[in-house]
Image 1 (cartoon, rainbow, N blue to C red):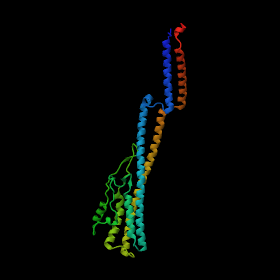
Image 2 (cartoon, one colour):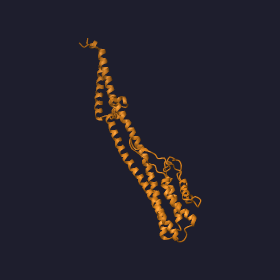
Image 3 (cartoon, one colour):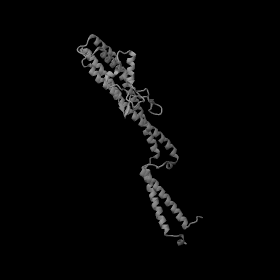
Image 4 (cartoon, rainbow, N blue to C red):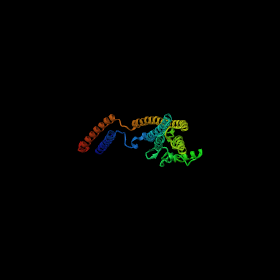
Length: 315
């Protein structure tokens, strides 16, 4: 036989009242936070699964941030490389027009201006770092400021001329390896000496010719015309090299963009998977909250009734 007592009734109703309060708080929290729980303890058996998903999500986020920085850098490199290639074309055009006109009175003035453009392009900075300096990101890779800087004391041997050009570049050959994701890396490094040597060699040839033979003044002699024509092939090679490097940079931009697209899809997938575990079912939580409120009200009402009665009254 079940024994009935006032103390037993109180204990039972207090238990029901406490349970209803816990349920009301639980479902109320889910509605306010829109999550099943606010810490891993609240997810019980899913805690380890959620931790693993969040670790993957964190890695994906880090790769996306890295890709964003790399995209900005490659974009700036594209501007600088395109400018250098355009400068090579401008130099070729100036030489071609001088030969065609038979007059090079303003040629050296034009070449001086274009040389400054080329130096500026190869000394381009991004976020305070020189893009084409290799690992020496705080050091300007090209120190020359005028056409005269391209030429050593004359006469000079071909080796001395070549060494003089090389000495104008202060970059090293460091190449960065940037991870796009867990398995893919890219090398976004370009070096000022590789980019500039062919073009600067042509400008050195022309400047040295003028220093040894005199300024271009009046009509071009046949010898002067032939010399300038001989530099056009070298200019074509220098321009092609810069165009090729610009294209390589563009290919890197495409790779980074594609990798970022895949990472964004993964990030969205992670959010869905995590949300499936941690996000509260608002409709279900609302129903359960109402049930908990009714249960709490009922338990409180019964408890209030019990507080004013005793089993002794019945006896």
